[in-house]
Length: 499
Image (cartoon, rainbow, N blue to C red; front, side, top):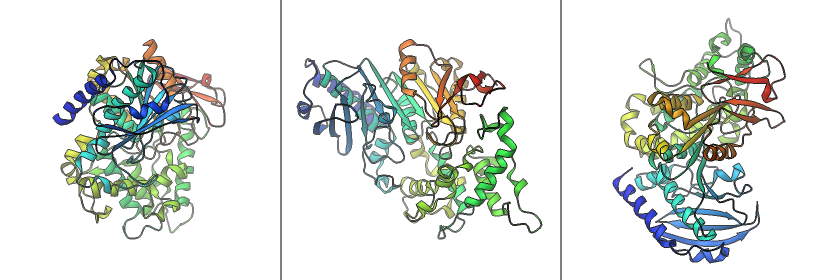
């Protein structure tokens, strides 16, 4: 964080507080918030709405181009939760809304982080040479929007919030860790799901995987590892590893114990059916071994598990027919290419054939420090009473769950008492943020609020399946262990044990 950013954050917070001082009153009419005044803030609209609950929606702009919205429910519970944004952001979004925040009575807010991008698109051109935009995307826009939103909450309801939280997944999870590390006093509690912790490592992984999937960057019609090949891998993995946790149910409780070697299904003696050719084996190894430099791991790998879903290995790593028309056949292809072209190289012609891990760290040093919340020291956040609740799906094919376990291991290694204030839960067979055959429905917001209020850290959570039933989740590094009976669709079929 630059001195300018720190000074602005401090001055803006003080100015916003001064702007509303002495004006506390009962809940005021929504339209009157169009007259809200604060330094460097312009309100563009304040309108009542009825969905998903009766509320007041306030839109505005901070500074030159940080667009934001604040949703203020009529039946307010006295609390605020800021929501994160996925991908490269670029649209006003609050991931807290998907956690039923408004239905639970929370005021919430979201932002576009200071730039515009197509919905569902992967476009990095907005960042080209614009380090203010990169800093806004990295962390500053969240901090400034949160300060503005809290002031609007105060103005609407006539009092300050009882509790202030942040909730995000993927890039929103990265933002969550940024808030804990850079702005430790902004939030009482933070939810960080499947966080994009290490941009350098993610870019390396995506680029090297894409090299194996599309060796010729001009030929992206079909990936080396096509759907039939992925089905072969998925079947072989499940045959070897599904029952290792004691229950054969299509779900691996912890895929780290799966030692499947893809070379065992490489075609031999001219056989072509039901096996993989050498190029397909190399593509799988790029995923499950991770990027390597001089014979050593450059970044974590992806565990087995995600190959079974079109939404996981298909959409993210190998390639999906639905994306080829956009010129970006996989999300790994799109995100790494746009990042290298416009955040790092400032060269719109760059492609994956030019990936060079030996120079990557030097090339993106400044961007890495700005974007990646890798600092394990959470002492300032913890000293302010903050609680960090993390989660990650074991079958996440977008952001490796091993990136999260590595980070939490580093936090606990730095200070073993951090476990009092930092808890992570791993979800078996769950994809990126949600999805997959595993239990992916968890009341994270309720769990965080209970933790902050009671001060009792959660040792377990319950995750429900979309089809019904649930499963116990254990606070990392404890592992869920099958008790030996039951179909695995009830929390009492599992217990937690320290490995």
